Amino acid sequence: MRSHKLFLSALLVLVLAFTSILFVAHAQDSSGAGLTIGFAQTGSESGWRTDFTNAMMSEAEAMGINLLFSDGQQKQENQIAALRSFIAQGVDAIILAPIVETGWDDVLQEAADAEIPVLIIDRGVTADPSLYITRVASDFVYEGRLAGAWLATATADRASCNVVELYGTVGSSPAIDRATGFADAIALFPQIQIIASQSGDFTRSGGKTVMESFLSSMDPSTICAVFAHNDDMLIGAIQAMEEAGITPAVDILTVSVDATNDELQMLIDGKANATVLLSPYMGGPAYQAIIDYLGGAELPPLIMVPSAMYFQDTAAAELANRTGG
Ligand code: GYE
Image 1 (cartoon, rainbow, N blue to C red):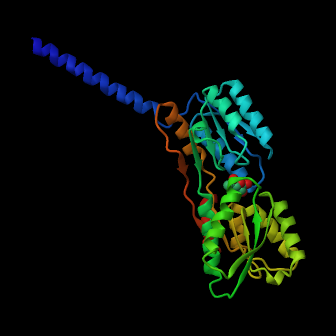
Image 2: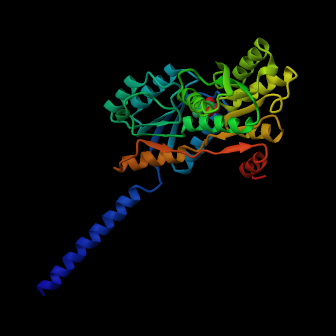
């Protein structure tokens, strides 16, 4: 009789343990139902940024997350104000896509004081990593290296190759890191030199203006290639080249970053040579990281999204794949 009771209570303990395991597992599944997350976006400077915003919204909806969206309109002060308003509203978590690297310490500390977790997405910050739970991003240095390595291969039979660089937003981590990665890669090939570099602020109009000034301040026939920190600046530069009677991708080689649909079309049309993919689908992993964190999980300091490269002969298949065509 006694052993029977013992057996029953042991069974009860087992059942309880098992259900609590199930409960924990359930708490960490992909449902974000009931969570309110504030998202401070940089603005809408590029086609990639629009794709990223749209992906953030649809991924939130798919996971049942109530996303509060703030468009920073390219100003850090607007983003800081958005964070303060999210803190005042008592959101469950904040996602910050920072425009520049520096200047976030105070507001991140305010979120920490209010015990609201902050996740950094896309561009990086220089703030103390203990002030945010993780960062979801791609490796911008690697993207620059891929671009440089591609150019080295494409110009392997040339005695020299002078490059003009369309630099991203000054002080932003992708501009700093892509420039570093590209410079690292071409350092192995002394015949490749950057002869001019100027910021086009990641915008189409900025890229066009900078390319126009390059083309008028030097002999265009001495320019071998353009490295643009994003597709939009390159698309502006392509316009500038065409208006100046230069055939892009033939007279001047191009390599850029993002692989937006518009840029894939440029590759298909033979107006560009290569682009490095920056995935806009970072919302899913970011929301999941927040759910895991709130469920008590330890997060890695960086959650990386993978990259890829597209060329004139692979762009059509990728575009068809995206548009279901
Ligand atoms: O490449 C560019 C955008 O922050 C890495 O920002 C991102 C960059 C992206 O505007 O198109």
